[in-house]
Amino acid sequence: MYLYMSGLEVNKILASIIFAVLIVTLIGHFGDLLIDTEHHDQKETAYKIDVEELAITDGTVAKKEEIIEPISALLASASMENGEKLFKKCATCHNYEKGGANKVGPQLWNLINRPKANVEGFAYSKALAEYGGEWGYEELAEFLYKPKKYIKGTKMNFAGLKKVKDRADLVYFLRAQSDSPVPLP
Image (tube, rainbow, N blue to C red; front, side, top):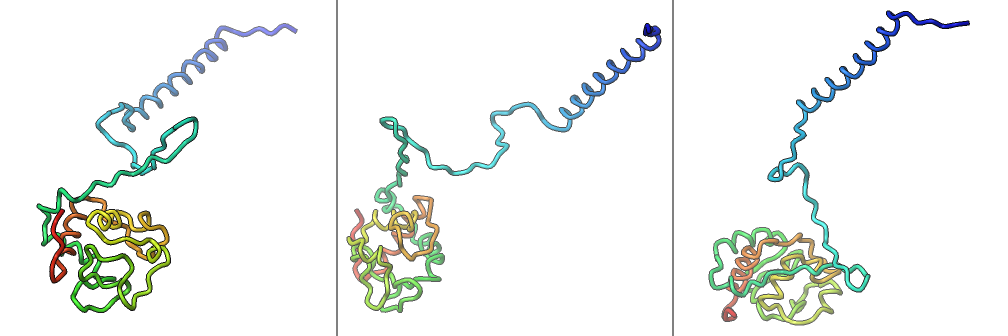
């Protein structure tokens, strides 16, 4: 049996193929009009996720240490008003008045150069009680950056202050809560 296609049938097949290609092309161009396909370097099109950077040394992967900016240079120009405003975040758990009672956290009167975990009648976490040392300017600022990272196991549920200026202002305010404030560094 011999199959024979007429010229009209060949034209129908070719027209169908051309029509299909034309439809796919039009849909692609229409999609490009709806969605901006140009890549703009200055535009951010995604959310940033903080991920700890890793450093590769000797073929092993190690976490890159986070550098916390020191506050000593900022204390001379620190704002007492901003420090008092920032303390409102702390006031739900702490008291800074002389002879003030402990709340969820210990009272903070005369805090600078005071030994850690030494307020009478307050039950400190084991981690803080064993940490030792005194609350100097830089130690307190590092603790306020990320308390749970500075002393792993602390009971203090505070996310921390990321801005170095805010930490300097708060430490400056806390320094003033004393009969004889410790001299600035």
